[in-house]
Image (tube, rainbow, N blue to C red; front, side, top):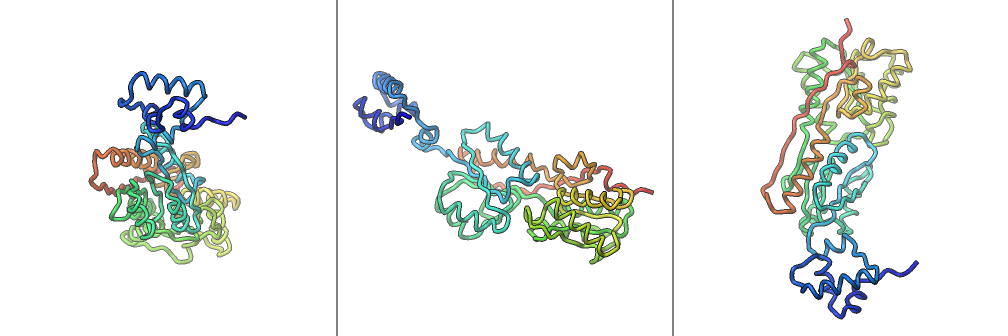
Length: 337
């Protein structure tokens, strides 16, 4: 394969500086038409194709957006990323996604920023520790947080307490008395807030969660928020020999795993046990699953729009917004008389 020509070789062939070739590449008006024509002719003769990233670097414009996420494979993150990818098409940014892993996402994120690779960043569902904060400030990296918050940054945060409250209120209003919760093996802040809102809603209706009906899966896949973990949790109820009337699962994948496990035990949803999830992923509709919609796609698009404002300098004022989720009622939580 023939060696690709370099910008220096083009400049030498034309008899101009590298800076002049760079100005031609970036369509600068400060180059004569005659010089521009000569540079373009030599670029064509030498089959020189400037890389987009190099052209952007020469222009001084923000070029690489890094989306830092604990997992690429969960439906929740996929919906946010879909919103990001659809909206980024309206910008001049190149997208790079970095998976920190769900076991220690803060450490994984620090390793990424130690490389200093991104010009702008969206951090999704990972807290920003002081060391990373100092790195971002030192590099003057335009940053937007999604479903996490820190006072120095623009962020879009879902009100998980409100979402959990809506789930508890719904089940209580349906007339259920013995209500359980399926959680993940880990306890990230959003999950704690959901469970707290749920518990408070039940208490306001004169109910409480029996400790025997509060169970967790064992699987650590996706931080414990997986179908496998939901399946395992139902097996724990089976081992106890007692099931609640209704179960709040802290996300939809837990709920889908729980529903499958119940079907294997010949228990029907909602006739035998009602189920409610959280996230409103695409599959929840096809499982007739009542859930809480976090507006994930919309948040992804808004994060990109906000980042564009920061990059273009059109609005430097901090924008910190907490978004209320909404209950999506379907058949899985219906009280069967």
